[in-house]
Length: 410
Image (cartoon, rainbow, N blue to C red; front, side):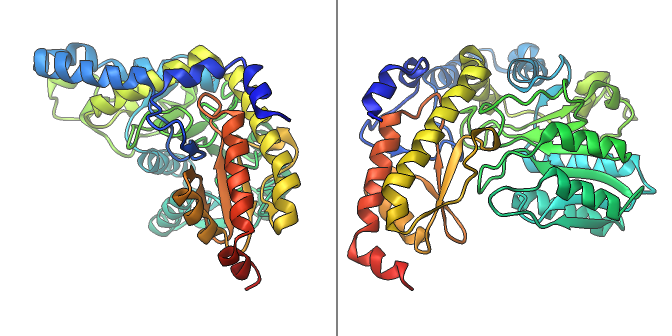
């Protein structure tokens, strides 16, 4: 398992050189939290600021107005398996999640229950708690295995417990802690058979693995662009609405960018046709421009090739965990089966927080997730096999140190 040989055989290795990497000695294993900046994104930002903002000023809105839908189509058709006019780049993941969950509940007012899992990402859980409180609904919490995540059987049992009374099933496709992949197709089918709508959070899926939104008949989805899509900090999020639902569901935040004739400045709101009617306020053009370059780079590489590299990286990391970390008291916090695992790997030890601090001080950047996990984000376009080997070698050395050894037995 020579990492240099693996890098030499990597068909995506050349993409690493299309990103800004100011310190080649830094081992960055956190692309699942914030991706590295593409060179094209920084060049695009400079051009938009100098030529479009400073140069053309307000006249640039002639082109900017179409950007949320143009970039949404690129993301949707190339990376998410959506049809044209089903994805828009807009707002934040939290805002989009709130809007789509609200719309789903409003569409099924006589059904009381929302199904989600207790290990879902916090913002999703918080939004659902608020919606349940304000709309007199109840959240039916799944309590999944911490590594395997919610299963088809878990969802099936919850639907049976609340038969005919579930409005919304909403889960993360890839668990943010363990990287477990939920069975999107089967769970979507189950929810539909029970008369419920389905909302997927694809924040850890978009740009990392194929999703097949249209093929699987998914109703609704949200996600971000700053992780595997390398859109930059605070980059705009996106939402997906299957075309037949775009007019039957109601946008709970009616803003002027979703108006049929925006500059008519009409007295009443008339939604634009299609996904355009789900836009709200003025988009952040600089963030959108940077995100477009990250999305374009992923589309060029191809989602199947990206997924193949992600599988290879995570398999390599798990092999090194077994050889180097498990003898030092670590346990694997991610599924071993590649088909059940996204593009990060979690390793667990009781002193994980302190080890993460020491790793960062040593020039290896992962992240920590409570209570005891170190997440290794392996971004296929920028992470090398050498990065993985170097990072885990440092972690193994730190685990042998006197400070961490004493804490491991606490």
